[in-house]
Amino acid sequence: MPDSLKARYQQRPSHTDAKRKQALWVSLLQALVVLVLLLACARFVTVLVLSFREEPVFSAPKTIYLPQRQLEHQMAVAEFQNAAATPATIPQLTTQSLLASAPALPSLPEVNFTPVENDALISESDALFGQSGLMGALGALSSQASSVSFLGIREEASRFVIVMDISGSVVNSAAASGVDFNSIREEAKRLIQNLNANTLFGFVQHARRFDSFQDNLIPATVANKQLAADWLDRKFRTSGTSGSGWRTGPDGSDGILPILDFVFSMQPDVIFLISDGGYFSSDGNRPVPLQHVLRLINQRQKDLPQDARIHAIHFPDPRNIQDGRIGNDMRRIATSNKGQYRRIGNE
Image 1: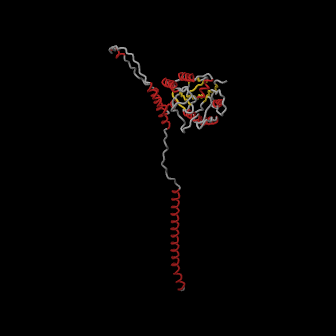
Image 2 (image 1 turned 90 degrees about the horizontal axis):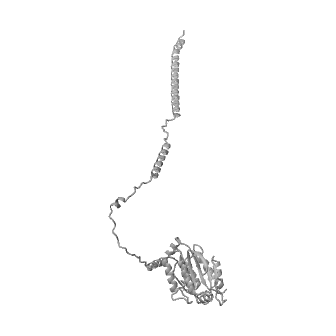
Image 3 (image 1 turned 90 degrees about the vertical axis):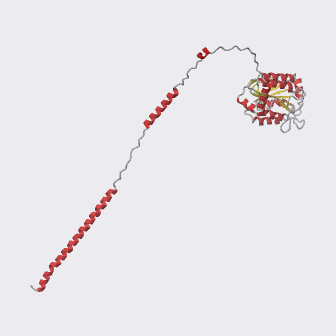
């Protein structure tokens, strides 16, 4: 065998060994790669499984004791009802044993005791109530109506005032009708004697100026009835002229308009208006028109809790003067204010 072939043949085994080593390293590397892949897959699967697992929740159901509370409420109500229904027992007090051992009362001499009534103090107190305005408020709280009759007109009123025209023309007209002014005074006195104690009343007499029994309506007590009777005896004018010191309106005016304004300030529910209808203004001898009187009455009626009834008692002037005075139109004053109209004399 030639040497070249021999050398070539000798070099072959070393080349085969190199390939084997190379294949061994490749296999080892592939094994490592597969191992790394398996580890990576195992880690991924482990994390994925753990991420889907729910964490435990520690909770306890609520405990409600509604039946027990309801039972406690019923027991409390039952205890309250039992306590409320139990009557309070008060031991009966007896004085028999005390009376049996008590000594006899000594005999006392008989003494006639007569209490002293000071009418002056009563009248002064009533006047103070009237001036302060409390009398009207108290009367409105507890008022009692009385059945009254004055100059032929019957009415049931709890707050009333009589407005009497005492001018010379009215005195003459009443005399021509056969009526004396003294008899009018006596009828007014009889009227107040028949009033209930809680009925409030008042009197106003006037010519151009006016004078009032009281500034406010007062209750018909025994003392006040006596005061009114004394006032009628002493102050009521039958001469046909006004007295000294008689009043006018706040602005100094006189006549029927300021008089009616004062009467409505008493807040009556019934007004008796006695006149011949000859009302004159304060700025001269001009008669007061009927429309002026009706307008004032309508305005003042709005200040009252309910409209006052106005009864007109008319003594017609026998001279039948036609100068624009109200005269027979006093009927309209009564009918427009739910009152009665009576004409006395000169039929």
